[in-house]
Length: 311
Image (cartoon, rainbow, N blue to C red; front, side, top):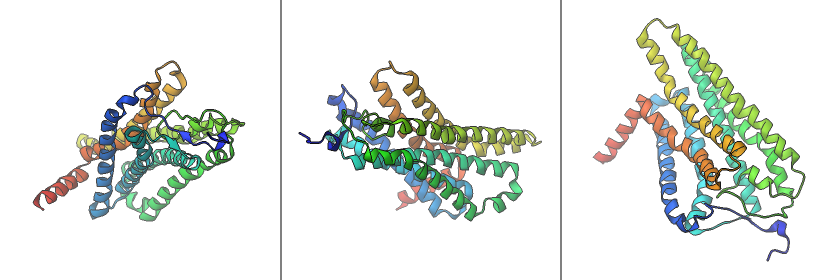
């Protein structure tokens, strides 16, 4: 059918063996996608609209919500296309571009969580100098640095995918494109593409997690030095939302890594489900965590809904 097998489009995969139930499976997926879009969209709207939220902590939260929205909008079209219409074909260029955005945004998310830890560290360690250290221009520079690190670090492994020949099967194992999935289909020397991501993960996810852990050890040390129990609780309470988001993100990262490394004999559906949990659970949970634990955001959401009711 395809004269040159290399030019044949890639084929995305939903849930193998459960194709007949794809329409039913699509219902919870669609519900989660809509919740993610509404939750993160609401956070962005509130932070933009309310001047009392124009502070470094909320600017970083807006970056987190924006990243979560982009991850969702990157994976949603192909996932829903496979589940709703069994639309499995994906062009090479479209596939590589999707893989580039998916992986870049994961590193951006890790970087934003690190920036948020830095924000909490400054707020608790040197509260009097907080506004002079975290100025608007510095917050913008940190944000730009996080974006550049994510998007530039993924160029080296993605670019070679464009000139690799693909003479094996063109069937991918998910309803979206991942670098590790595509590279295995290449009939070429993929040593660089195997080694580079391991180093990249160590220098981003792993290093970020270590720095976040270290910053919280220092924060805890400072909080324990506060005489008043009430002040201690107040200081720690400002960190609860961020700690929760960090745990949600890194537990899913660790879970996915363990399944890939040690779950060779686990059913394929477990691998596929775990990758969806990784891409959907943090964007779904982050707005919920912040709306429950942050009084200012909670108050704004209540105001927003009461305004709509009056209207």
